[in-house]
Length: 136
Length: 136
DNA sequence: TATTGTTATACTCTATAACTATA
DNA sequence: TATAGTTATAGAGTATAACAATA
Image (cartoon, helix red, strand yellow):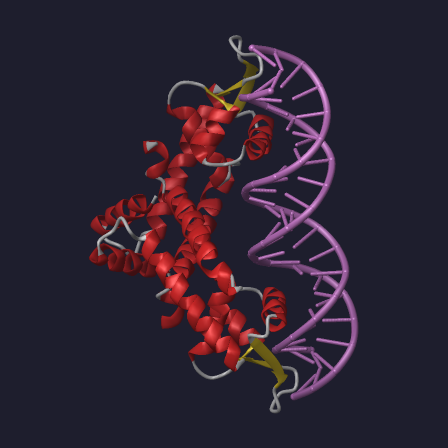
């Protein structure tokens, strides 16, 4: 196994696969996926964002954001409305119910993350996040 | 950005995206992609493997391995031959030329990994790999 | 009956190009 | 002319089901 577990690409890929499976399992009862949760997280953060701004924050294409928001709007957790200042833009906001569902799903996601990190001490978990952040 | 860079899923995804881009750029001149390199790594490791054994080592489906090996065989870096002991199995081996290409591409991949880890000290890089290994 | 390799197929995630409405 | 959102489409990467050859 040496050959593979010394490869950063292998480790990142399989870490992502395992974390993804844990997060999907944990958030699925709340009807929200991991990617959707990340969208809600930037929308819940502060001032309302346009679709393009949200896409740029997340590092996804604006065409990807369309499908993501279609699904979130169909679930009733976000709403789009035309910006009065620039009628080309859609302002996207969490609905009150969406905010509630976001918070419960976030709790479930955090638990899945802790499960993923179960083999690490709290200090090691913090260090892993710090090191990953440094590579961005 | 806080909201996103404190999420393990976001960090893993973007780390993988960045590393993937660096590795593809570095290995493309050798005509081998990052996933192909991982296949060659397990084949170069020790005794010859069947397609199924190689797939299991890598954690990919056996149908995925078929397409991967089709490409590698078309490039002349691996060869399939029927196992004499069990004629259902294909034994996969690196060709002599494939072994050479593998080693040059591996050197390029290692350089890309170092570039990815440039913001970390050598001790931190080692620690990152150790922590990721612990999560498997 | 079970296993290995294969093919066909489909699903997810993503990006590119082209359209529309607005600026 | 340029930008925001949208649609259609296509390309990776992956998995499931079914088949042929072999055990």
